[in-house]
Image (cartoon, rainbow over all chains, first blue to last red; front, side, top):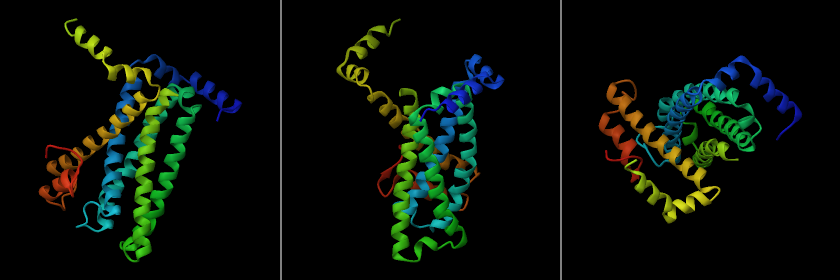
Length: 165
Length: 80
């Protein structure tokens, strides 16, 4: 997707003092990228531990609610760090990301996985046995886990690909 | 530089050439590299935070290490 409005928006960002500062400070982008990747590591490890439990592959000696309570805060507290560091990278080079179809795909995958995560976390918060009560729910949560893992892997891959298209 | 011959040899290898010539191989390798980093750093962080005494205090170190490292044949990182 590339529109005149998006072009204008990118051009406006590039003229802001913050963007100018990032453009002339050679170490800012790699420094922020390092923070971004460390935050990705925190989210991905938490997502993996949680989803492998949802799949029933790992940590079956603990209920889903307990594993979720351990890793949910890491996911929700790290996402703002990812959004902020990602935003700084965008402000530095808006055209490179905002007008890139892989970046747009990455954001679509991100929004999808956030909605999916909320969709299973909300009932779990109300009823800690929610995903264990019926066979349908046990199957559904496994499917959710597989889709969620695939989406996160897709997000990381898309992140790498932004630089190459 | 003393290592230049090694780099030149690496550059000339068949693998080097395939990766260089292929349009999408490099970004895919990079994606796998970053995914692997997240697994290693993340699983080490979970165990190390327990060792420091910050989180997962309701679980023993032995149990947590087992979950993070070699639960049911899943080798997330090693050596453990």
